[in-house]
Amino acid sequence: MKKLGLIIAGALVCSAGIMAAVAGEKVITTTQLPQKAQTFIKKHYSGTQVALVKEDKEIISTDYEVIFADGSKVEFNASGDWKDVTSLTEVPAAVVPQEIATFIATNNYNANGAKIVKIDRDRSGYDVELSNGLELEFNPQFQLVDIDD
Image (cartoon, rainbow, N blue to C red; front, side, top):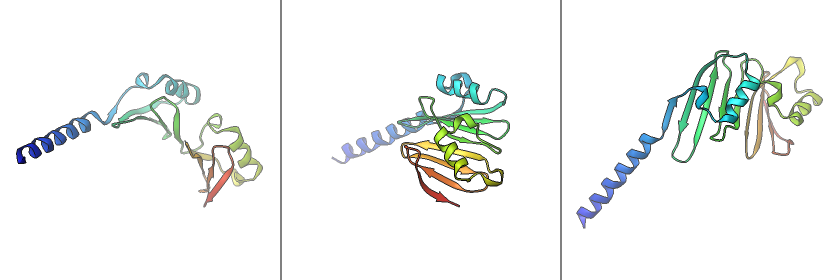
């Protein structure tokens, strides 16, 4: 019985090691990104040099990160949909949903020239960070649900 337990434990350790070896982060080229991600980069960052592209394979998912020479960064999911866009100066305006851009302008959150420098999206909605340090959280229907300053 002890031998059977050791064999099972050994098999589990080996399979965990194999899974860990398969999963991981590696550098790839932009042409290895999903087509949607390539199109996004061409549309919103056509004049910006790509510095690094990384693929992060987990056991059940794959994510991609593109870092540009100007310090901007975009994260994509396995389908090539953007998850997170970060910029040192301003996120491309066309990336920001119109409802959010209008809300920020209408409610004067962009006073003193504040720009959107980061936007994240997931199932729960959007998180927007402005250059003045203000963080706004929107639900999927683009309604403001939280402000963090």
